[in-house]
Amino acid sequence: MQFEGVLRKMKTEIGDPIQYYLLFETDFLNVNQVLGKKLQISFLKYQCLNCGLERPIFRQGFCRTCFFDIPAAGDWIMHPELSTAHLGKEDRDLEYEKKMQLQPHIVYLANSSNVKVGVTRKSQVPTRWIDQGAHEAIEIVEVPNRYLAGITEVALKEHIADKTNWRKMLTNDVDDEDLVSWRDKLRSYIPEEAAPYFIQNNKETELHFPVLHYPKKVKSLNLEKTPEYKGELTGIKGQYLLFEDNTVFNVRGSEGYYVALTLS
Image (cartoon, rainbow, N blue to C red; front, top):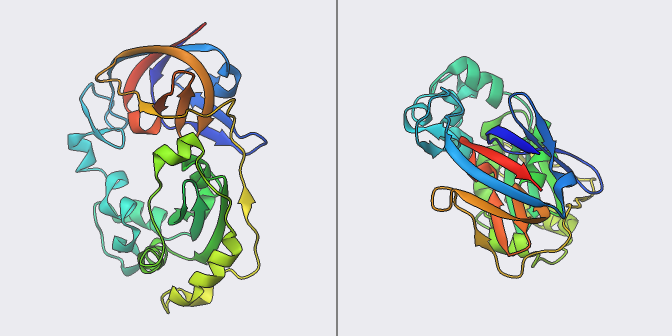
């Protein structure tokens, strides 16, 4: 059986375990059903997620031209504290930025490899936590726009990490943490503008990933260097496919790559 198309980050569905789907233009694959089977990945060409042209991918699935032009790749995506739509100031496209920035956002704690702080739109909970490979997470504040979430994250990351160690996450070298205690401990560092939005009485969310066994030491598959790979799929965590030979493949990091997937 073969599937062909441009890679985008896997869609997920909360469950025990989480369900993963690769969506292509005319077909889709429930990746959970491939666990324990051989999967061949063949890199055929590039295809920018915005313009659709066969151009080398620069970042986030976009070619260089699109990355520096389209509103979906503005600096405020990675740095929410740079959001300006609440002031009526345009970065690249004010209408788009109002739509994305002027909606409820969550500042959260997630434990993937360590406890970290992060920001996401409320509509992306728990998807964002799943994409980061977090086995537990909790909301800290819910604010009405992206800017308030961004300045809260900036303040909190002075006292807690804001990055995930992806190697530890993929080898499952993690400890359970009391995220309620972490939430309460960090409360005093929330900026004054966001303090009224603190969430006081909530519990951790636990997430369970479809993994038969974890790699002991990961080696990352780069399709530009290795355009064809075949291995037995043994797990899915975050946006990574895990294989029996310790190879791991970052689907989201390969967005914009047009591939053929062959099952056997």
